[in-house]
Amino acid sequence: MKKPVLWILAAALMTLLIGYQMLYPNAELRAKHQATLCNVVRLSPELNTKAELLQRLNFIYDNSTPTYAYYHPKFYRVYSQYLIQQFLALSPEQQHIARQDFEQCRQMIDRD
Image (cartoon, rainbow, N blue to C red; front, side, top):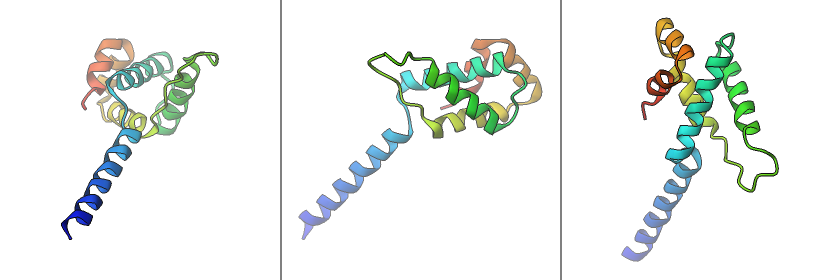
């Protein structure tokens, strides 16, 4: 009786871990997403809505790797939305600072 329950629990745990891995990038890809967002807000100050920022972030991220590259990093939409929300939650003064200084921007949105 205990063995089937253990197998079910193990399968559920594996499914949970795989789901987490699919939705949340590793440290290297998190840094790339953060850097891309900071470049987007720095170079495009006219973008102020979540949808506009997400669209531009996706475009820049996808086009930052050449099409002939062997490895094309995955764009994590959920994590990108989280980063954009972090940026939009900043005060107008903090957003202005983030738009001016790349490193300050990275520090302000890196809260995970």
